[in-house]
Length: 124
Image (cartoon, rainbow, N blue to C red; front, side, top):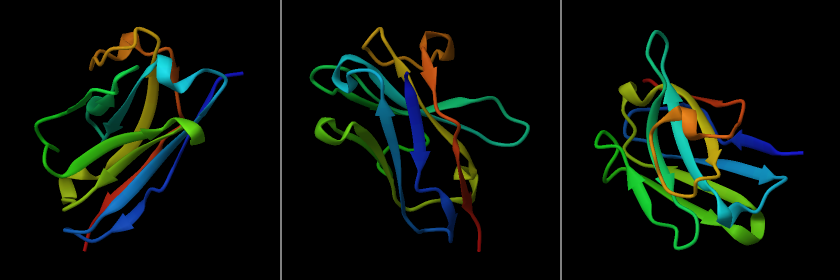
């Protein structure tokens, strides 16, 4: 049974940091591309960061470049999203998703599995 479980969300002040975790089971992590998406109230889901299969090439949306880093620990079957210098506009529900195509894409239709999401709120 495939599962993706996000954790690490919460309330943080502007300029603060959080690390999100995506724990996966039911498939081999290294063979899938894993992405973090986010969705704010009234907005469409958008891709934030992605790590490909194999050599783990990473991609980030322009809005988070230089602030967010995606990484994976295959031994722990976990993908991380380290977020620094958080801004109020980063407030959203963050989802991790897995794509069997293996390479990074922001097209949500390519993702086979999704987690339930974790709330990130950036506010003073």
